Image (cartoon, one colour):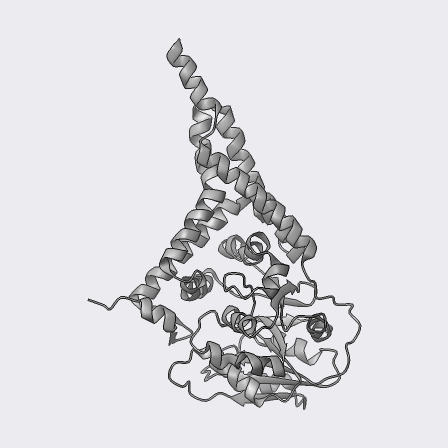
Length: 397
C-alpha cells in the first residue's frame, strides 16, 4: 500500500525540467505577443516621402529562370527618380541576356557584368559591393533576384528610414511550397519574433541582438559608407546579419520590419535547393559549433521534449505529465500561429511545430559537419570561413 502511494505521489508531479520548459515556453509566447504588437510595418499605403534618388541593386548569379518576376515588379515601382542596377555575377545560364530582354529598353535599368572575386571575398558581398560602387542614388535598396515588390514598396521602405532606422529590412512574405519548405521557412520570422526584443535590438550594439534580411535591405548611401560597405563583411556567409552588426557598431540603428504587404519571396523551388541553402549557412548562424549545440538543446527542451514525453505519460496514465506536455506543445504552437498571422504564413502549419524544430536541428547538424569538413559550396563556389571561424578551426590531421 505504501509503495502504491509513493508511486502515485511520484506521478502526480511532472518532472521539474518539463515544468520549467513549459514555463519558459509560456514566457516566450508572452514575448512574442509583445513583439508582434511593437513590430514595425512597411505600409503599402504610405504617402510618398520627400523626393530623392533611389538605386535598386540586384545581385544575380544564374537566375535566368526566375528573375523575370523581380524585374517586372521593379520596373512597375512607383518612384520618380529611380535606377535599377542588375549585376550579372559570372553567370553561365544567360542571366544578363534574360534581364536585357525583360527590360525592354527601359532606360532606368542597367545590366552590369561582375568582375572576378578578389581573394577573401564571398560571392554575394562582392556582387553587392560592385553594385553600390556603381550606384548614384541617395538611397540604396538591395533586392534579391527571387523577390517581387509591390508598386509602393520603395516608398514604404524609404519611409522606414525616415522613421528612424539607418538600416531597414522589411521582411518579405515567404512563399513556402512543399513539405520541407512549409516546415522550415516559417521559422525565419518566428525566431526573431520569439527570441529577439525587436525595439531594444535596434539600438543595442550586442551582436546577439541582431536581425536582418538581405532579401530586401535599404540604407542611405551615407550610412553604407559609414558602416564600411560590404567590404566590412566580405567573408561572411550571413552577410546581411553581419552588415547589420557593423552598422550597429558604427552607432547606427538597424532592424527588421513586417514587409508582407510590399514584397514576396520564394527562396527555394525544391527540397534539395532548400537543404543546400540552409546547409551552406546555418553553421554561421550560431557563432560556433558549441553555440549551435546550445541553441539546439534549448529548442529541443522547449518544443520537442513535451511531445516526446507524451507516449510514456499516456501509457502510464500519468495525467499530470500529460497536461504539462500538452500545455507545452500548445504554447509552442500558439507562438507559431501568432508569427504566421503577422507575417502572412499558414497558421495551420503551426501544428507541426515540433517537426519544424527537428528539421531545423537536422539541417544545423548537417551544416556544422559540412563546415568542419570543408565541403560546403553554393552555386558552384566553395563557402569559406570568415576570420573568426578560421582562427577557431582545427588543422586537419
